[in-house]
Length: 194
Image (cartoon, rainbow, N blue to C red):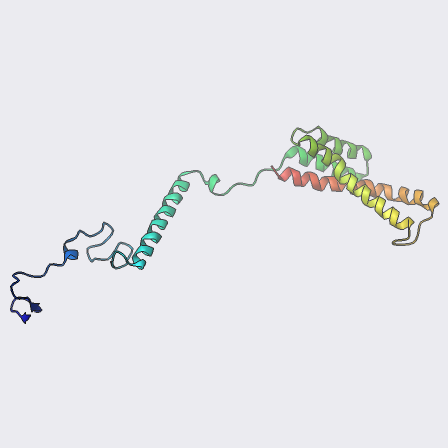
């Protein structure tokens, strides 16, 4: 090879013309600018390079996310953030009647407050029974355990058999109020849940 006058590089004897580089005559991909850089700012590299594959993967992923966000943006904003359901007014009213019964001490209001959730159509049959019998039953079971512990000397002074009746009579108003408040807590929780 001898240096020729046509190009600055070496010339091959018996070869007229220049050396064609096939990559120069290929059409550029659609996402390249006039400067030879891709639209996202990454210079073109070999087609088989891992970096180019990674860039292509990330670009397609970003486009898919943008399309999904565009479809979600077309829907109402309520679909984007689920609204908290409004509490059920009937169950809240029953809880309010129970609270008034606890504060005033009228047992008739407590009975009405327990009958309202039992008559409601909002609760399923098992939930109705639990709202009326569950929390009061738990409170009464706790009181029974406390009385058992007192009669057997597990905690506090031991109660004699003739003192148990007086202890129950002294506890009864507080047990009824505690049972009503336990039902109120359940009703408020259930009213906020759909």
